[in-house]
Figure 1 (spheres, rainbow, N blue to C red):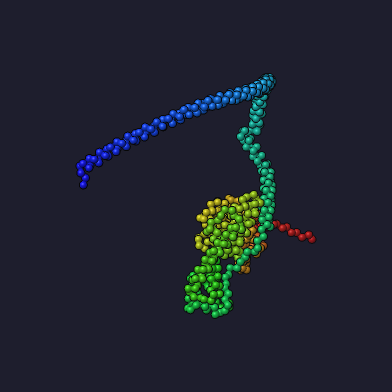
Figure 2 (figure 1 turned 90 degrees about the horizontal axis):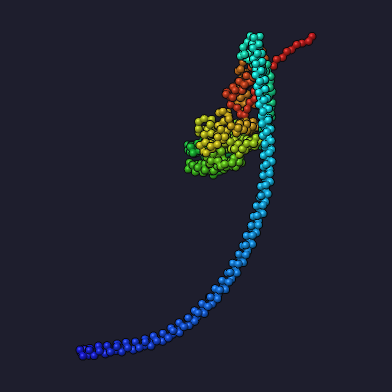
Amino acid sequence: MWTPEGVAFLLLALVLGLAIGFMIARKVLTNKTLVDQERIQLLESHAQTRATELVDGARKDAERVLKDAELRVKDDLFTRREQFNREIESTRSELREQERRLEKREDSIEQKQQTLTRKERNVEQSQRKLTERNEQVDKRSQELEDLVREQMSRLHDLSGMSREQAEKTLLENLEHEMTGEIASRLQKHEDRYKAESEQKAREILATAIQRYASPHTADSTVSTVDIPSDDMKGRIIGREGRNIRTFEKATGVDVIVDDTPGVVIVSAFDNVRRETARLALTKLIQDGRIHPTRIEEVVAETQKEIEKHLMELGKAAVDEADVGAPVHEKLVHLLGRLRFRTSYSQNVLRHSLEVAHLCGMMAAELGLNAQLARRCALLHDIGKAADHEMEGGHPKIGAELAKRYGENDRNVLHAIAGHHDDITVDHIYTVLVAAADAISASRPGARRETLEKYVKRMEELEAVACGFPGIEQAFAIQAGRELRVIANSHKTTDDDAIKICRDIARAIEQQLDYPGEIKVTVVRETRSVEIAK
């Protein structure tokens, strides 16, 4: 335990130790301070010496720089003074040149002014002379008018007619005398223009036909499927006819299985369906597995192949025709369907391509847009791909479909709707498409008919002509491309023959259906026969 005396002694010792330590520390610090002061004084004297040296060096450098600057300024001032003197001399030269030019111009202006002054005096003299001459002319005109009135008055007194009556009589006589000459000249010019236009049209058509030589495009419209044996017919029919019923329901066609050996006939109004059914039936016969489930699988597979094939055919046709802007996919698909459509046994897709090439050539000959002409011609029969699904003729259907699927060009729509003269033709491309369509349809071998249809068409053609009064006989020649009509010369005149020819052509257009064009020729002649004895 600590005692109070021990604690007091300890505190006293601690206080004495602190006092002694403080004194010692103060002594040490005092000595250190004296040393630092001496060091600082040495550094200050050294710094002052260094500063003095730096100031002297800087003063010398400044004096040198100042002298250099003064020299450069003097040199620059001298250079600028010389340059300024040169510029002043150049400006003085330019001013002296301008003064000379101005003096020349002033001289020229003075000469012009003198010339204008002389001309003004001449004009004034001419005006005075003209005024005097006008006064003389007016005086003479007044005298002539008085003389004419006097003569007119005498003529009225002698003829007994007024001025209006005399003018009317004179104009009537003049019109009567000039009518024949005017008609002759009009007829002459009309014949010349008609001959020139016909010659030009023939050259264009001949050039187009010669440049494009298409193969005959007649195709068969009968679809038959060969079978290896008669036992296959029974497998196609199936038990109680379930196979053939399933096939007909899946394809939408009629399958005719008769006694004809080795053949099964596929019949359908839609040529695409008929082709799909033919291919599907061929696959089933090759596979040998014929039952309802397999039939549905093969038909579905064949339909996909046909759709793909139609798109490929349509794209190939568009590429071949080179129609410019892209064609809508639906129109491409419809073009592919035309591959399986025929008109008078002529394949419609090949016919459309032929018309496109012919139309493009004729348009190029006339300086028109050949790509637009080929586009109009390629799509002109597009309605035939859907005419069994929509009401109306194929021109109207085709125009509606083309407009629906993005064909906004009026030339294209008008060519589709008017290539059979169903509407008023007022577009040049429609005329070209109609001409190329007639050329393609009239190629030898392009279209064929049965003998019965051919004979019936010839008889109907001759019957239409014989139904007009004054017609004795009518003959259809050149496979129905021309109709020769013999008119009775005692019952008709030349004017009647012209009218009858036009009426027969209109009647044929309204009453008959025919490919291409038919030329109508009415022959009227008078024969006088005498026998010398």
